[in-house]
Length: 224
Image (cartoon, rainbow, N blue to C red; front, top):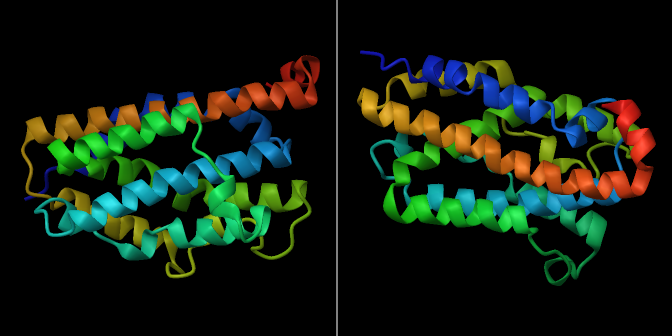
């Protein structure tokens, strides 16, 4: 029997998703205004977020909820390592640091991993389905704006192990609907997904400040 979690997540996070897309940093990005330093910081922040999330999911892969949405082919850490090596060189691990908003995001993942691991699902859903849905468009924008060739510098967006993204998203949604959860648990997962969107927005808002300093307030205002 379906729990309709996929539909609950889609409807329940619709506003948060819209809010995230309307952050100035993302609106500029979609219009092709991609500052290299901001993009590198975005990927660096994501390296820390995905490393934490993927370690937590791996730790709880036998959990009755997490086991059903355990898809290692989604993992981004390895791709992000390639991007870090490209932008920062061999000493990249000594170079990059998580921003304040990123530290908040990591702390939340650690907290739920310890106390309520089923909620990791909300972060998996928010990040990975978003990456599969809009990531290729963002990759093309970054490649064009930063004059990058192939996947060099944008490996994060490249899901080599998922050739049919639409089919995979459908498989993921079907897995959501089969999870052994009740309505109360479903509501908590939706609430956590909304919080995940907020945590992502806070990272974008940090980068927005850097972008404004780079392109100027007038140019920024004309874009949003």
